Length: 150
Ligand code: T46
Image (cartoon, rainbow, N blue to C red; front, side):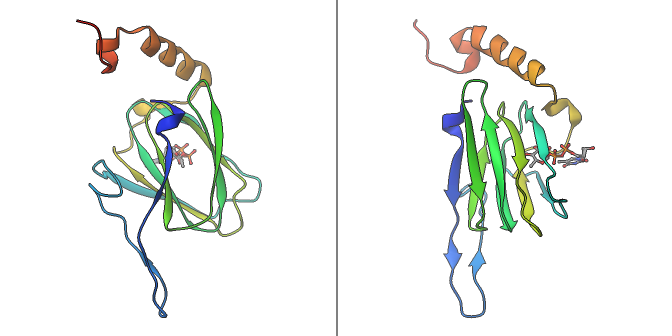
């Protein structure tokens, strides 16, 4: 996976004088089965979250309230996304290093994840992540699911 696979996804927003409504559908706005939902809140000023990559889990990050920055890195390129609307999500594929910072007061980050939590799915040391990317890059194309010459 590369940073090019990361993307902002827009969700429907039903405007209503009683308040707006947004929905997220599996198989539509999210193209994986959602196995877990978690949220980060009560973040103290100046705190950072993340600082790791997942081996298999893909995630959709949504700023349900307030705002924060998500900095993504695929081992080659780094890109910063500012999330501040609950009708947009940031899709993050596996093998993407991420950290979250600049949380505004009262912000809530909700995450729709493709896998249940297991610590074995994490690279928590950047050098382990880099080493895994090198192994992937050295693997024959067929093992990476890429087209290869017959
Ligand atoms: C990501 C950002 C946005 C669980 O027991 N279950 C869970 O589902 C999760 C996510 C965490 N935990 C435990 C594991 C640790 O003992 O909660 C503790 C903190 O977890 P972590 O260090 O992973 O938290 P963050 O906020 O640094 O990162 C999490 C996600 O891991 C990560 O994928 O994108 O939130």
